[in-house]
Length: 214
Image (cartoon, rainbow, N blue to C red; front, top):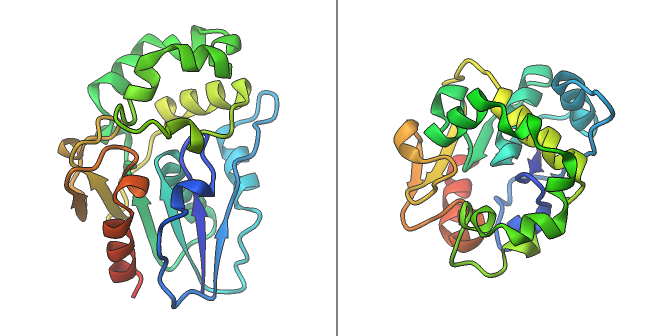
């Protein structure tokens, strides 16, 4: 059985570099983020992201943050044996007040793509603080910096709607201000972790993943 993994917004597999994955998987396959096509719908994008998944062999899905949303959508097209999400939500109802306000105001749809350039993002301290103010290596994990991808993705997160699937296994961190556990009913809560808990709490994450996928 294979495990397909999708990282968070703008991140690659480096986020998982210290995770010890269960040995019962024949292969761990990381699916990289694609750049959205012009005027591409979310549904079409999900289909493109799902292309690497071979349905001829049983598989599981693991997604972090925006990747958690993505694997839930992929699961609708290509059902997995098990779906686990890290630092992510099971429906739009679990979004924080900040997300709901951003969605209502449509602020990110009004901001030009130039705002989402690397230099501009780095100049805004709140962007890093949103994830982990004590982690100076934040930008190490933020590698997909295409402005179109970032603006498109943020707006798709805000617009996302999904009926909660009770079979989804959700792992959150108690100090995560992006997707706080108080808005959800997670299966696991990692103490002392921020949104970057797959990096900062990798031992605990590894233990839980081995338990869940055993």
